[in-house]
Each structure stands twice: as structure tokens, then as C-alpha cells.
Picture 1 (cartoon, rainbow, N blue to C red):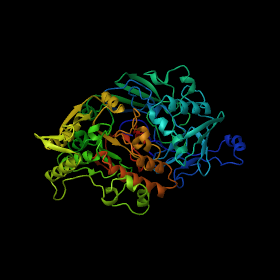
Picture 2: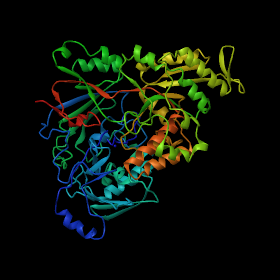
Picture 3: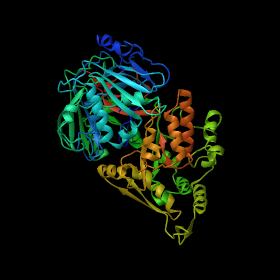
Picture 4: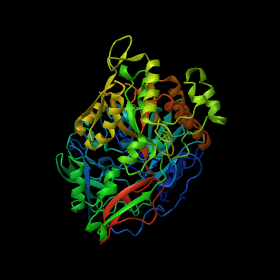
Length: 611
């Protein structure tokens, strides 16, 4: 929610932007409420000051003169969709629904760590300690059927999302203790006994749903009924599971607000579904869709060639970004007995040869990941000292001693180390964990069972990364199988934690907060659909997550996140992969983009068609 939108999806995280307060007669109406309380303001920053002042005209990274019109054609590599409700755990929602159909109370800007400005909310009020927040809604805010957006819709949205929505929302808004509708365009949220300064901002990210539409409908079973939204696009047409087209709302109520100027410039946005990425790539080069973000190093190095690239009809760019890369890696499901011992997890990491993969598979394009908060000041490095050490000292007796004595670096084959050396180190750790070789098999000495597990995949292209890893482990007598399933089955199995090991991305923003509960807190370890894929259930991690959420300022946030990072790394929940500090994109030259790219990277919603 760039702060990256913290929505419940498996891989990638939608970006939100920002807006200013415009003086309207509404303020004389609201003044009676504020004589002895905080004054209404146009935005809120997590820490520090807002970049954009009251009355700003547009974001620095958009073109305010961008023309409207044309159709943006995009692709999705997936087995289809069966729902237009992205807010529940049931089904697979169509691409783009949450981004285009629904507006939120506030907008995040893409060139600040985490700041928001009013969208549906014209202004916001909060005390210094942020124990509550009041949103004053715009009188002109409308749903797509023309119905005014009121405080009752906001109250309804909070209630339905936290009771019938995806489990993510229950955790995300868990510290809200009371919701009060003060009048038709004014709503107050009180918070419990918490020092969570992020709560006003994460409530600002809440999508606003029409209470009147859902009165006689079952929220979790809406299927492919076209919903009434509040955002810049409505669903125009669709072919179930194959394509969906969004149409610009011509009388969209917010189109002239500063956060919307220069954004959402396409008349239509059309997604076509492909079962195979190779087919999708060829379809792009044939002109069947307009834009592609490339995730394969091999494709980037070898497939983007030919006359259309040479004559400039297709533009190929690697655009730098400054957003945290998060963690991508092989993820252990510690709920499974085979991965319950950290020494076993640590040992298996020695079987992954990143240097070989980067050289032979990735054309040396990647950098090894060493942190859950890679590519940011939040990443830990060296040994803990100063405030970080003070934080960790509180838990010394409960932590792996290496947190204090050894800088975390994933095993590699650089310098003079070889895979033979790494497998020898893995063998020593496995012996310490109670395993030994019997008849060429790695067997647990007490149970007599061979060490075996399954790697679950949905991308066939990733087999070329996984198979060398499994072959290295087989040299230790470990039985590893690779199972390739379709994307829908993969989603369902991951939601129910029905896997041993997966490859997964754990995205991060520049301002971690409440969403960290979804990743690491024990309260989410057994909640179906949570992003606690590893099954982290550690009281120290719980306390560190709470400390991150309650950080009083940016300096303390950085120290607390680094401390959390160290504990997670030395618990060996993942085998880290790699990261890239550029977005690799290709697009047909009728697409145009702004001159300025925000630190969070490209956002197609700021682009337009050159007419």
C-alpha cells in the first residue's frame, strides 16, 4: 500500500499516491468540531514532514498535461480468474480490480518513505500521540452509480473487511478499538492500548466499498458479478478466466484532484491471460499487448532482439529504482517436521550455488540478497552495535549466539570455496542435527527416516534454478522432488500451507509497520491465507515486530527493523536468492512515460499513449 500497498496477494505487491487539501465550504461546517482538538490537515507522514504542501497541484513524477485516451493492453501469465472480489480468500480475483475499481480514503506518494494525502477523505485529524484519527470525507465523493460516499460506507467497509474479508485485514486493522460515525461525512477510529503511529495511515489505505450494493449480496461469494466501485475505472467487459477490460469512468468524481492529475490516462485497460510465459513473450513481440516487465535474466539477455527493437518500435529499458528489494528465496515451511530444526535449514542452504546460477543462468545480472530489507537503509550489516545491540541484548538468552558473533552471509562459492567445501559444511550441520549417511541415504538416527522434501513450483522456467540445487543435495543422500502445478493450484496450496518448500517473494516498503505481523508474528502462523509462509512462531520475533510497529521516529524504526532482520536471518527461514535494482521493461513506442521516475520505480498508471 509505496509505501507499497500491503494487499493480500502472493507475489507483488499496487502502489498508492497522494493528495492535498483544497479549501471548500466544508471547513466552516467542520470548525465546530475542532475548537479544542487537532486541526484538520491535508496529509500525514509516518515520520518527519510531508513533502507536498497544502494546495499542491500534482505529484512531481507525473505529467499534468498527459493526454487521455487509447487502450493499454497488458498480459497476465496465469490459469485465469473466477472472481471480481479481491478482498476475500475465496477464488482468484481478476488482475487490476483492487487498483482500478476502488478508491481509498488517502493516497500514498511514491517519492516519500510513507506519506499520505486525502482522496475520499478531504482532511484528517489526529492528536500528537495518534491515539485516534478522524477522516472528513469530501462532499463530492461518489460511487460509480452516482451514490454519495458517506461515513456509513467507511464504517461498513471496515466491518466487512475485518469480519468477512481476507485474514490479512483482521491483522492489519487489529488495533482499532472503536469506530464512530460522527455525521454523514465524518468518521472517527479509536485505537486500543498501543503506540502504533502507523494506524492512521493504514486506515487511509482502506478501500471503500458501497454498503448499499452489498446489503443483499454475500460478500465472500460474489464471483463474477460486476461490482460497484469508487475508483477511476469500472469493469467494462470480460471473458471469464481469459480477459477483462476496464473502462475509464467519464464522470469520475476525483479526476481533477491533485493526486489524480496526470494519472489514469488510458481510456481502457485490457488484460489478456496466457498459460505460458514463453507464449506471452512472443505475443508481446507480435504486438498483441503493449508493455512487459521482464523477470527472466535469460530472456532479457537473449530474447529482446529483432527488427522491431532495432528500428525503435519496441523500446527496451532498465530503469533504476530505490525501493527496498525485500527477500526472494527458497522458503522452508517450518510447520513440517523435516524443517523444524534450524540446523537442517542452515545445512540445506549450502546446497544452493548462487555464483554458478548467476554466471550460467542469469548472465551475471543479479546481486545476492543478504537481508529481508535489501537495497535500503533498513538492512542489517556487520555485527550489531549501538542501539541495535541494546535491543538484541534484551533477548540474548533466547537467541542464536551467532546473532552477536557472526555477520549473516548466505553460503556461496566465491573466492576459494567450492561446492565440495559447502557440502562438507552441510554434512557437519546435519550430523549435529542427528542425521548420518546409511546406505548412501541421509537418515535420521532416531527415526530411521531419510531426509526428504518436495519443492512446489508453478513456473516451469524456474526448474532450471531448482534442479541444480536438488542435484547438489542428492549428493548428500537427501531425497528432493520437484512438483510443478498450475497457478491456481499453487495459490490454494500456499494459502493452506500445503507445501514443504516454495520459492516466494516477500516484498517490503521503506516504512515497515503493521504488515510485518502478516509475515512473522505467531498470531498468523496458522491463519490460512496469511503471508507467514514459513510458520514463524517465536516470542522474540513477536516482540520485535511490536517494537517496529510502535517505533516513535525514523531513527528508532531503522534500529528496530535491523534487529528484527538479524533475528530472522539467523533463524534460517529462507535460502536467499538475488535482487535487481532496476526494472527491466519493454514497451511499444506509442506508450510514453514521465521524465521523472519516483524512487519506488515505474508506475504504469502515470503513463499515457502518444496520439
